[in-house]
Length: 596
Image (cartoon, rainbow, N blue to C red; front, side):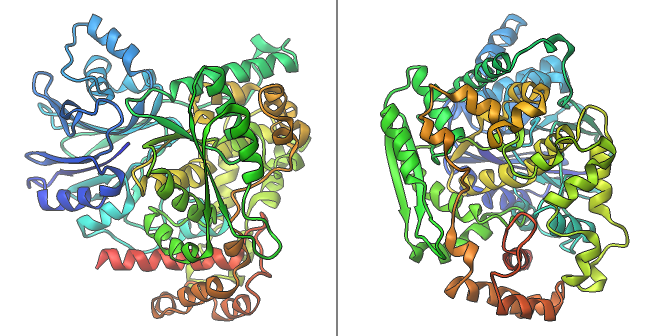
């Protein structure tokens, strides 16, 4: 896992190496093991390296192949790189390293932009063709690895993080009002290509962008999962689906052990990460390092799941690390987590993942995580209300159970000048739900959450917080072949047993029943959910800061009312609404500091 950066000029100037150096240095946390710069006329690339595959200097980046006339920077991993290497060698390619980066480079030379269809993994990369000046940007199917772009007349910059683009300078940091509407509606999710800043966009998942030397570009979307029934599996029983899902997960977990360094597991004590541990044990893994985090209780809410993670660790004999976090680390952890965010994310899980990654990175450089199972397999409580809803009523039904607030209620929180003239969030969901390839209201919601919400909330959260400490997180439930299979599973099998029924039934006999039958848990950080004492004051400081008052996003009367009763206002999904406002202000104030 790494951090990449690049600049392409279309105005006759040479690439600004100083700006490239600033972008690259800004991402040191993503790649503490090495760095490199490469420039050739109007194009320059930068890279920070986290050494996972081929630890030698032969795997360093930017990687140049003068024979092929190509240079590449790459962030991520191609799990099937060894198999692809064999195929490419048979086609006549010679390799100077054992890295997956070189496989990406040679694969592009052999198959062009279609190479992405052969990659099993998570990735973002940029390839430069020396002869033509063409630059090709690409992102993995589920958007697990980020790629931000700043496009202006005569100039294109790109990087793995938004702050890296700010470090280069000249970014338009005005707030995008449509993106703000998404943030206030979708639980902080701003779908690609937008970000909350007008001057920064992100390459959508499953997309290849070809940028020509004259600045023209074209995008190709190379993958869309189907959430419809497969005629070839019409006769399958529920047990058939359970076995197929378990087989796909076995493959996904095994793939994600490909590494030249040890791989651990983030073990929350829920069924998802527990099943990952169980399948690794089944495959003969011994001495597996597992990690669980816990916080102090607050407001009558427990702050850890050690009981269940300990049960799983004992069952499979893992090298288990219980990481209790006392409250003295939590308050500074908030600002540190905000500083690690490429975009504002409201979930209190961010702080938990940040502090967990800090501790885990002392032991390993790679972990597997159970992230994504709820979106892919119907684990959230907003899915059951959609069962049986006619397709024509699906958008309204989904909006009622998922939106933090409706467009008509924006004026209760935002000042009038920040409210867009049309209901952009509802229009967006209507377009997504109306696209072909989703059979029922539940299918449409699962497709939306897998390809949109998951990408720009949970997945981004894990990437930002783990990579803040140079820790690579791998997510087997987002193996694209598993996602394709899951999309075909009848919704009633996913919604059974309180959600993820097909997974729970597949896990019987592998995972302790106590883990399967427990009430669904979340990554708990009670002190932030309750917003009392110093946490309430941190929120007040953010919303009453002079910068916040100058910006004038939120109605002062609403902010004062919410500060008087900080735990009274909740979104539809139960999050603290005051935290949502404060988190955005904390992040925007960080942007102001970086852009100075």
